Image (cartoon, rainbow over all chains, first blue to last red; front, side, top):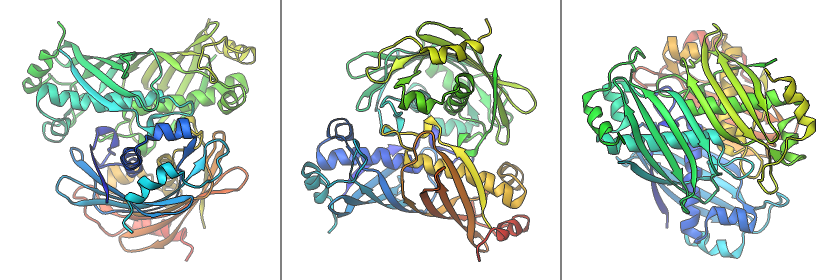
Length: 137
Length: 137
Length: 137
Length: 137
């Protein structure tokens, strides 16, 4: 099962060549990640950070840039989880344009950390169930 | 008449104090501006840039930051035009949160320029009508 | 007396038209502001935020965009203070390119706030002297 | 042989947890990349884009985030090339803080493309020599 979300490519994402500047594809991925987490786990990232005092910093990313993101495109993100570990989680991203061309694929490992002491900790149960429902295992 | 648009405050907008970093409020304003232009004029900014080869760079901005944008907030933008000149246009922005608190107000003057030679030019008729319909005059 | 600082226009600042995207001029201004504060007051912004637990959020900005920032330009910022109040401070920015063309001028009012409760408070004495030395009064 | 360059971590790079937001590490990497290219090849990226009409979009990135980038840190980048192909190039990045802790490592493949038709093309000779001098082969 995958979360599916869409956003338009806004002008601030573009570079001089009129295509999305690649660091801003990661920025877009984070915006989708926040929405995906809410859909998967039923709680928002503001709640995780503000109340549970945990975050999910990324420790490893592999990405392939298959085709440029053009101005006027609408990007659909398919996001799922390929592995839920004790403290870490492996996310899969596929970004497609309105013609269903694959533009970007990425695998990202995030670790659950306490924002109090920045130490890793087990993924809380209230999130684990939601995350596991979106694994492809 | 004003265009009304909403977006959530995403994590990438925040600074270390957990509120929106002010340059990213201008970035948000531009994202709303693109959507507003489409609603006002019936043509998208990608079309203006890519086909008509015109842009609307800003030449003057006055802004007041009334209250912080917090994570989890949904911002509603009210955007209208206070003056349509021959080559320039004065835009009014009011950003409110979900409790209807005014967070930000801004007045911005944009000039119509040719992207070929970067010289100012009269606002094309196909845009003028739409813009004038959203003036408060 | 004014602080004078230089930075190059990096590719990430550019938009599709090959000139600096205006919200990123404010981002650049903040990067200069941090360096200026250090030169004026002898303490860094990391120390202010991390140890003194104060920040200087902006509440009012007026800006004029005189000419585009082009790729390859080196921007020299002249930064001084036009008014030091009890809790607030008015900053003057002038950005010039390598040919001494004025590109951008801005007046920004910042308020001294406690990062603990986000309430305004008097500017600490250890900063006041430095700030006053850079006023044009 | 590696290019070595330093920049400070500015406030705009930080997230709510007070560490660099990871997409902005890629943004920083691009700023270093521009400077590195100039040192390696003796011509600036503005010249490549504006005169030679070529660019180096990235097609594949692998990154490991070893430790957080903190506010006040100075990052030193070591940048070299592990492979110069006919049309593509593999870049190695290592980012260290002022205590010589490794914060980030990344391998990035860029392809030489014509900005006229966005098609890949052989790396021009005027760049190849410089790039090859910074390979570890």
